[in-house]
Length: 126
Image (tube, rainbow, N blue to C red; front, side, top):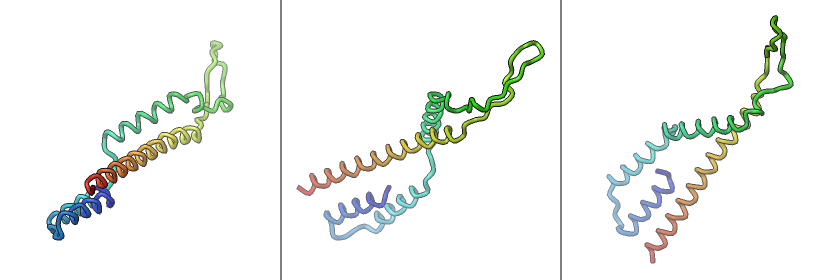
C-alpha cells in the first residue's frame, strides 16, 4: 500500500464518520510499513530475466567486439579463435533499456490506477 492509498482510505472513512477506529488506522499503517521493505517477487525477477535474455538474444551480433578477435592456424590447417572481447557497454545498454521499460510500465500502471481511483471517488461523491 502506498502513502496516497492510505490517505485516500482515511479520507473515505472520514466522509462516513467523524470518528476513526484506531485499530483500523494501526492496521493500515502496518500494511504501509510492510510494503516499504521492497524487493522483487520471484515472478517479477523471472520476467525481468526473460526480457533481458530476449534482448541479448535479439542483439547478439552487438555483444562481441569482432575487431578484437584473434585467430591462429592450427597444425592441421584449422583456424582457431584465440581471443574475442565482449562488448560490455553494449550489454549494459541492452540491460538498462529493458530495466527502463519496466520502470516506465510501473509508472504507467500507477498513473492509470490513480486516475481510476479518482474517478471512483468522484462517482461516490455524486
